[in-house]
Image: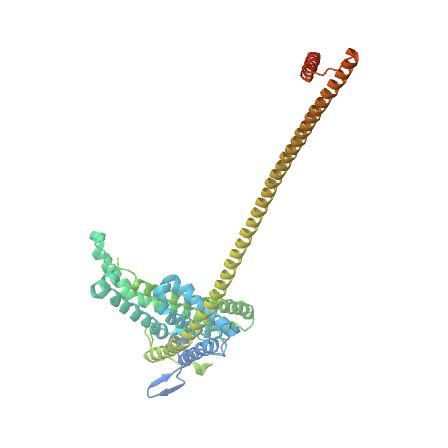
Length: 269
Length: 180
């Protein structure tokens, strides 16, 4: 099915009834604007992104607004999550001394991304916000600006470039090659892969769930019901798997962000 | 369901960010970051720090109590050892004193015994001498009387008489010496 189809899915279509499988595609990720303000189209993923903000803020507000020395249940859960990012990622990668400053950013990133991912399997929402490249790109951009500016702030103009390009005289004749590769890899490819890693995982996961869901429905005719059942089991399996992937991808995104910051702060070669 | 999905006007590259979405995404994140970084995480950090201090304070207190208990125990042990030592010393002293006392008593007893013996001896000697003297006089008188009776005359000449008696007695003593 091509991207210029008017109707993304034809719900009336079943196997053996003469119509083709309404396969999911890029159009799966396009939403009709809910409303439009001065040319600004507000869509469901945007709503979900803002709801993610609400969820994260409300949860941490409940947990940390009036924290107690002996924590209640919500605070205990909040502390566990906070500690997971703080100790498990930031302290591990950047170190306790240098890393403390970046803990709020990493904690925000982790829980914001995680909640945005989780919408994928929440009924009615059913859409992982980071499967639209703009969302991970924005976050990756923040991290990119942070670590690049940190690099130059920490090492100065030339030192910063040396840090980014992996400049090291002892490399001898391979030095130019290393400098070029490192330049592209760090400055150009890194932010791209950082964003795309999250985007692609959510994109593919959503596509799979949608495909098996549509197939389950589409196969609901005659003998097709047997296949449809298998397809539906796959929906359940994929949902559980996505639950896992959502957390992993949030973790990986923050892990990479921390390692970029750590690289920026680290002594040059 | 259909209404949710929109037809794409043109083929779209999923890798090109939609500007509106980018803006919303950044705003959404900045709100999260702002509230967490400015308010909530400092809150919890303060409490975590307080808790850490409370726990460490507790540990410190326990440590202090333990150290004090140890020092008290140490003191008690020292005192006990001292008391034991003192007792041993006293016992030793008493033993020594007792021994010395016994020694003294024994020496005293010995001395008294010797004194008594010596006194006895002296008494005996004196008595003997007295007896000897008395005896000599009596014997002299007796002998003189006997001789007077025998000779029938009074031996008036005292000096001669005395000489004779002395000679007699000396002979007697010599005999007694020889006999001993």
